[in-house]
Amino acid sequence: MLKILVTGCKGRMGQTVTECVEDDAETSVGAGIDMGDSLPDGLGKSDIVIDFTLPGFTNDVVTACLDQNKPLVMGTTGHTDEQLSRIKAASESIPIVHAPNYSVGVNTLFWLTEKATEILGSDFDLEVIEMHHRHKKDSPSGTARRLAEILADVRGLSYDEDCRHGRFGDVGARTNTEIGVHALRGGDVVGDHTVVYANDGERVELTHKASSRRTFAGGAVRAAKWLNKEGIKSGLYDMQDVLGLK
Ligand SMILES: NC(=O)c1ccc[n+]([C@@H]2O[C@H](COP(=O)([O-])OP(=O)(O)OC[C@H]3O[C@@H](n4cnc5c(N)ncnc54)[C@H](O)[C@@H]3O)[C@@H](O)[C@H]2O)c1
Image (cartoon, rainbow, N blue to C red; front, side, top):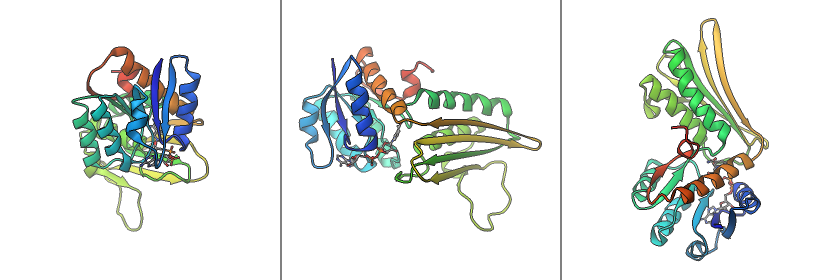
């Protein structure tokens, strides 16, 4: 039985991860911790961590995993470049799965987005739209960022330099080398993402809508079991690796 430490166990995702771990015959909750609880103690009772918390806690989680040589499934989004570098550096010593989205459907959307962008070519204008519940803190979502990165990679553009996050005022006509990214917030929306390809006379839209957090939590449990089964000793992986889509 794979014992899992659920960090942020009182949060929306943490509670759902706990349910999915308990429902899975191959996993059990080693410990659940939230604000004020001891991370090293919880980790000592567990084989692996599933983390859905805040980016500010990532350094602590990574350090604890390095200290106890335990694998990590990182679900938290909204990291700075420095925090991302820290995750990458740690993955030289321990195995880490880090995915902006653990749902099978969204990972299929990533694959389809790459293919559609290749097929449609450079005449199409590219926009990404995401919507999440009113409590979401980071923007754009990690998934919208990944979608924009895929668009940028295929088109030979840069996520940092060519994305336009929202438009306001006299911003001028759209250029062919910009990728629009727009974040909507409201209600209890679990997570909607659409990639828009717009040309004169036609438009293609690829959309994924999540209606349950179990789609993310179940994927994270699947990633934890994959790391365990493969007996991976170190390296940085994403959900495409877990699903065998690479
Ligand atoms: N990768 C994915 O598939 C995916 C899917 C959904 C959400 N997310 C991300 O997961 C994260 C959590 O989302 P949520 O909706 O569950 O948020 P939430 O606010 O409901 O829960 C976060 C939990 O983390 C706890 N926490 C924060 N700092 C902590 C610390 N220092 N020590 C211990 N616990 C701490 C909070 O107390 C809270 O219980 C966000 O970054 C979100 O974007 C990722």
